[in-house]
Amino acid sequence: MKRRILVTGGTGYIGSHTVVELQAVGYDVVIIDNLSNSNEEVLDGIEKISGKRPAFVKADCTDMTALRKLFVDYPNIDGIINFAASKAVGESVAKPLLYYRNNLVTLMNLLELMPEFKVKGFVFSSSCTVYGEPDQNPVNENAPIKKAMSPYGNTKQISEEIITDFINSGAPIKSILLRYFNPVGSHPTSEIGELPNGVPQNLIPYLTQTAIGIRKELSVFGDDYNTPDGSCIRDFINVVDLAKAHVKALERMLDDKSDKQLEIFNLGTGVGLSVLQLINAFESATGVKVPHKIVGRRAGDIEKVWADPTRANTVLGWKATTSIEDTMRSAWNWQKKLRERGIM
Ligand code: NAD
Ligand code: WQD
Image (tube, rainbow, N blue to C red; front, side, top):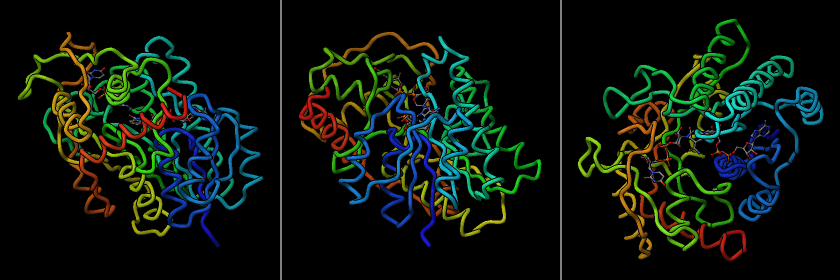
């Protein structure tokens, strides 16, 4: 029998790319999403790529009754990938309770139902934000967790602790915490991609919207950091590469490749690129100029952070392989597709 996986937040950016990879290797996927930051048309995009439409339940993971019904309607779920969360850093400062409630209640509801419905594996979307400004780069999984700089970041730290405590209490589950660095780009078919709401806060959507003329110019937040060109450094990880790591993580738990009940992996390329280098990479990969100007630093920004992905490379058997040029082209093609479809 095919393994059945519940993907929460599966119509979102990373979730949709992961559903495609799960279906490609034969998993039966059920998505739950409340469409608070995505729309049902994403299912069409997934179907175009996979030739298969995943089961979809429109419901909120904070609603225990709806969740329980899902586990009854779709029995024998083997694993869960929990993408469902609110993720805008700035909004989390303005609306902390919304973030704590949405992200933590979702997590606790899912964990609570796992033993009852005999679900074995749980993959959690964590973030390099837990490392704050690391003492050294590249950063590995043993680096200290720094005080969170936003309620959003704090929900990731608390979520990691909740999962750890639950497993330490003897819960009959396995979990893998995946700490993503900066996911960027889109599926090479341009059938799915990132759908930012309103004015983008993140670099790539702002950059592609500037390149297509929706925004006048991109502001580069600071050129006086202690980095070679003065702009901040990040580890930009292709979203399809990232999605594939989730398949590896599930296999590891469901096939009992490890005795450990809880493991943590960094998901990054291992290469740090500055904001200015990224703009250059976009321009040379696409031939499209991005009007930009240097402005002051953005409050709360980390100066430099990039991953040591050795553990994911050797233990999970996963490696990021897509070049930054291909990733930039995919982001640009997606932006053009949104224009063609009259969305932006
Ligand atoms: P996204 O907003 O595109 O996807 C999240 C999806 O979850 C959306 O479709 C939204 O409608 C849904 N959702 C939110 N709350 C829900 C709820 N209570 N019930 C049901 N559905 C709900 O975000 P994304 O970029 O795909 O991120 C996925 C996960 O990865 C999140 O947990 C995020 O915190 C984490 N993460 C993202 C990044 C990043 O830069 N994108 C980096 C690190 C970690
Ligand atoms: C990247 C770099 C900006 C926009 C955030 C969250 C983090 C994680 C990913 C989930 C920074 C610069 C940006 C712009 C710019 N999410 N920038 N002009 O800040 O690394 O991480 O998203 O867990 O938690 O904090 O990503 O894309 O916002 O910024 O110069 O218009 O681009 O200063 O150096 P960040 P980002």
